[in-house]
Length: 239
Image (cartoon, rainbow, N blue to C red; front, top):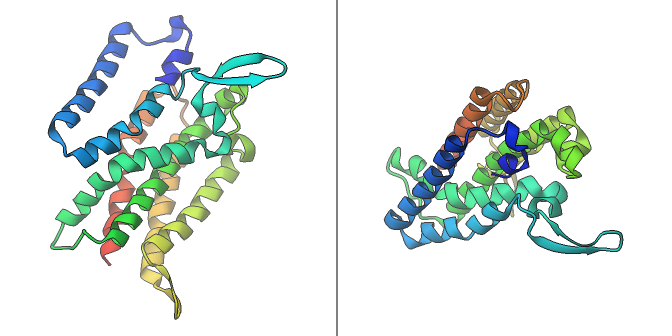
């Protein structure tokens, strides 16, 4: 939505495409409101206001040079922007993706620890996706003055950081590296699978980053399929 608003009128998609997209999204939200349980509805609506206001100048700030100005919420978060988005998105989708894992076989998914680790896996892979979009948007974010992680580190360093942190974080969450009071237990097969999942995810994102943002097929596919690896990561929680 904020990308559409930032484009000049001559470069925007046709009005009917915009209306179809916006009203389609609202139809999905309203359908979820009518059919889902209160807990899930709460998860959606608690982050919806931030999503709607994300790219709109609506936060009053005062500076000596400019006086009172309205800023976009996303400009106030600096390097934490992608992480905040990842938490918001994961709060909505983590339960749904975990349900897929729980249906695969007889398995107890009521454990609070299991659900917490499932949530943080969703945060991790949402963070991968959001940061990849920030890598794509380095020129625009630099021009707008957004100090995102890719703007500071550059494309290659950001991908290397994501891969390193991702393997370590997933190994901890799936108990490939299990820290207990008696010591540290290392399970090589789980670490190898974490390395494979994160490595393949970052490789696919690297390939998509070769395409400009105008390539709707590449970036549309990434938006639709970019979170698929979290299903396999959550399935590893059963091991």
